Image (cartoon, rainbow over all chains, first blue to last red):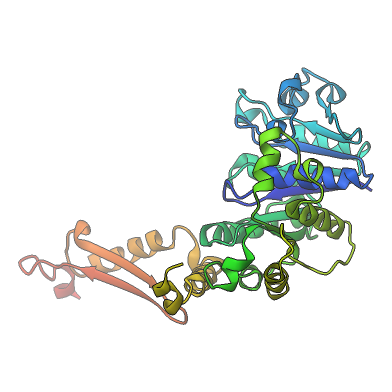
Length: 271
Length: 89
């Protein structure tokens, strides 16, 4: 059965789009049929991070307005034939994003895909609430930093109150994805530790993405990090997170770019 | 990290403590966005039945602590216009 997954955070710049691309690709690399949807109307970027920016013809709002059929708007990834992108509109009015319209699009996608990954815009306005509205599962992207943790707490509250599942008395499966983590800084007491963040937010952890230049390198060339450099530390961390999302119990480790004894030591401490 | 920083310890424990206090409040009913506004209105309404004062000279301050919070209401009452309603009451 299809799973609708929202990647959200409240705060901007914590890695939602990067994580949507990487998790979407990781799930597809494992054989699942995946579509990633950009909900950031007016400020779309998922197309750019996925390297499909020059192939956008129709977008989500065109589909909602009936200007284009869903299959016309879906962009098939050049590297993975089972990975698709539904881009956001770059210019049109945000009000064109209607709940009924999105419900229909998601319904149609459910019959075609195993995973429907919704990349939420920052904030708690319409775009963000609509991105989470139909979610079965949520990945809350958090940096180990005060403002990001506070906003994640807010988003967790919204996931428990404003989603269709919550209104039906069910629960959205929530998973915390900690990004831009620097084990050495946490060990020195300069950065919140994984345990600190988990204790404050009391939400199950799905992955720890270490701070890495590979993430920037991948977005520079327009490729999800799991495709661009599958053996890099962040890619391995995203692969692990994707497997946990499918329900596989995996031990939590912090992957390192270098395999020094220090990295291993810090990894154990943080996990 | 400077040598001084090493002896002082990291700042992460401070971040953790601040977040714990803040979120405990934000999650509680006390955090309803308009609470201070409502309190201000009602306190002023109650006061104005007994004393006269300039609404601009009222300050309401909140300090959210770990186990207790304080709400301070500072009202400047001019001596010349005192006790309109209070005298009658």
